[in-house]
Image (cartoon, rainbow, N blue to C red; front, side, top):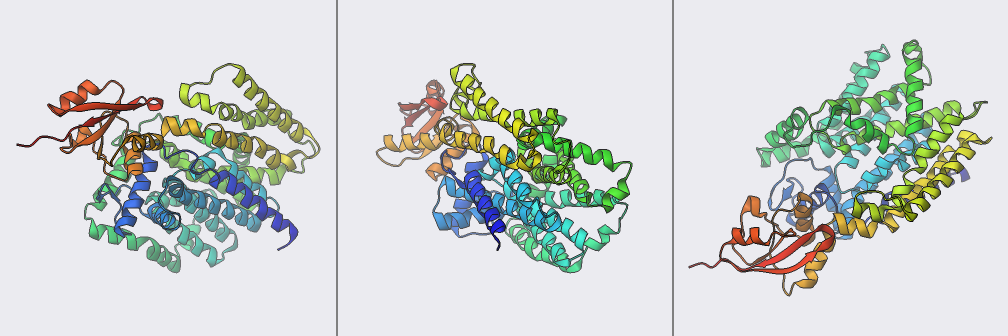
Length: 535
C-alpha cells in the first residue's frame, strides 16, 4: 500500500467514523420505526429465533430479516441499547462508501476518493446511516449490486456478475422484491437506450442465479412455512397494496420526491443537477456513441438516479427513505462531472460557484439553531440566527473563492466538506439534548424509573405511535393502548397527553386514578391506576 492509498484510507475511515458512528447514542430512538425495529430484534434475540420477526410476543411480518439479523448481532456484541440498534445502518453506510471508492478506482481511477467522500457526506446518507431502520441496509446492498453490475458490463468478468447477484440477494433480504424491480428497470432501460438488448439474456447467468437463490430463498421459505400468513401480509399488503393504495396512510403529492432528493443530496445537489442535465443533453442526439464511450457510466447513473424517483412517485404510499437507493447515483454523477471538467481552462462558472456555495453552507444555520427550532418548530430571527447566518455566509464565500481560484474543482470535495462537518457537529453537540427531550421516549422512561418504587406495567392513552413504541423499547415490555387493547385489569401506570385525567377516569370506572407527574417537553402526564376489583 503506497502513501497515497494509506492517506485515502485514513480519510475514508475518519470521515465514516465521524459522520456515521460518532454520537450514535447522543439522542434516543425517534419516530415509530426506530424503536419498533429495535424491539423486534431484541425479542428475536431473547427467543433465539432467527426466522420469525416478533413484536410484543406476536409475529410481525411487515419487513424482511436482514436488519434484524444485523441488530441481533450488534446486541450480542455490544448489549441491547439504542446506539447498538443504529450500528447496522452505520456499518452498511460505511460499506457503501467503501464500495464507491473501490468501484471508481476500478472504472474511473483518479477521482475515487472524491466520489466516496461525496457519497459519505450527502445529507440523506448521513441521516439514514444513523437510523435503526431497514432503509440503509437496502440502499447499501442495492448500490453495491448496481456498481458490480456496471463493472461486469464493462469488463465481462463473471466475478462481478457474481457480486451483483450476491448483493441483490442481500438487498432482497433487506426490504423485499423492490430491489429486484428497481434493478430490473434500471438494467432494462440501460439496455434499451444502449440499443443492445443482448445485455439482458447475458446477465441471466445460471451460477449467479443460484447464488441469489441460495442466499435469499432459505429465509423466505422458512418464514412462510412457520407463518402461513406471511405471503399475504408481506407480499400482498406491505408491497403490492402499499404501492397501489393508501392502505398505510402515507399519501403525498406526485412531486413529493423532488424536494426529498434535493434535500437528501445536499451539499452536492447543484452539481448533481448540472451533471445530469449535461449528460441528458448529450444523450439524445448521440445516444449510441455515448453508451459506447467513457461517458456510459454517466448515462447509467442518470437512469439509476431517476428510476427510483419515478417509480415511487407513482406509488400511492410515499416515505422519504424509499428513494435512498438513488442517492449514491447522484454523488457518483458529481464525481464523473469532476473528472470531465477538472482541467477546464475556463474554470467553474461564477453562477455555479455561488449557487453551490450557498446551498452547501445553508444547512449550517438550522444546525447551529437546532436546539431552538426543535422546541419552537420555526427558525427565529434573532441574535443567534444572525450569528449562524454570518457563519454560513463566511463558509459560502470561502467555497466560492476557492472554486473560482486556480485550484477550482480540484478543491470541490475538500472545501464542501467543511460546512458538512460543522453542521453534523452542531447537531450532535448543540441539538442532541433537545432532540432527545422533544422526540424520544428515552428521557420519559428515565423520569418514570426515578419515580417508581417498583417496576410496574405501563399503558398509554391518546399518545402518538412514536411514544407508544418508544416506551415499549426502553421499558422492554408490552405497552397496551387503551384505545386498541382496553384498560389493563392490573395496577399500572398510564401515559397520556396533558389534560386527559377526566377521560381516563371515565374509561377506568370506579378504579382509583392518581396523578404522578408530567413530562413537559412532550406535554405528557402519567397516572397511577389501581387494579380492577374482582368479586
